Amino acid sequence: MDVRGHLDLLLLAVLAEAGPVHGYAVITALRDRSEGAFDVPEGTVYPALHRLERAGLVVSRWEQATPRRRRIYELTHDGQLARTAKQREWRSFVNRVQAVIGPATAQAMA
Amino acid sequence: MDVRGHLDLLLLAVLAEAGPVHGYAVITALRDRSEGAFDVPEGTVYPALHRLERAGLVVSRWEQATPRRRRIYELTHDGQLARTAKQREWRSFVNRVQAVIGPATAQAMA
DNA sequence: TTCCGATGCCTAGCCTGGGTAGGTATGGAC
DNA sequence: GTCCATACCTACCCAGGCTAGGCATCGGAA
Image 1 (cartoon, helix red, strand yellow):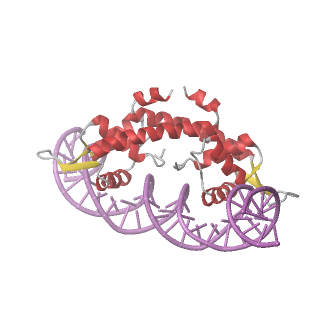
Image 2 (cartoon, rainbow over the protein chains, first blue to last red):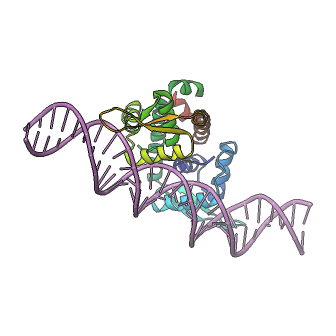
Image 3 (cartoon, rainbow over the protein chains, first blue to last red):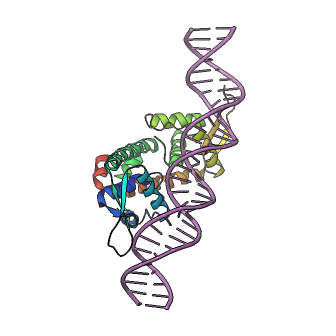
């Protein structure tokens, strides 16, 4: 299942709840939390994290003294704000879609 | 608000519930049902309808004896199936996202 | 009567985002 | 010693959706 334009929300959510974490762990966290549904390829996640960093929503640093080189990502303040904003957007989006595709479906979701 | 990869679902839903309808009406229906949120430009909808027709999910015919020329779109049987499939996908997608971004948000949606 | 906005259709091209495919390197298990 | 999992990366492709334009008709307002 692809992430359909909501990748940033997912990444920001993982970073917010899992704390400072490296890229590969973001991928596994996404897979675990979605029960395997969001098996997002590395070629999607790494560039996305770089985008978020360029946008100032995350900062990264190379982890010291670990067996493998790891780049640790962390939300900035702007990233926190963006996360809550995107969550609001997400809720609104879901409600709008629900309104279009019919209340029966909305009920079936509960 | 953009439709983020769920345009086909929205179009199929409108066509399923509003019955045979022309393209411009699809646009207004989408806007009305979403309370203005999905104000999808014509340059998005018309090509999308053509895609759906090429895919065999809708058929179109030119309406006879109307003041303006109108192309009427209607779901095919495959279109009906695709609609229900995409609704299932949508529900699943929402649940997965919810699982990732946290149950608190899911609760807030109810 | 003339003009403008709403209706109704269309397409060419851009841009972004996500996926594919491939490369590099190290650690641990067998 | 070989192979898989870990861990990072980028170049490229492609689809989808948006911008920006064009065309035509109708009704109402000025």
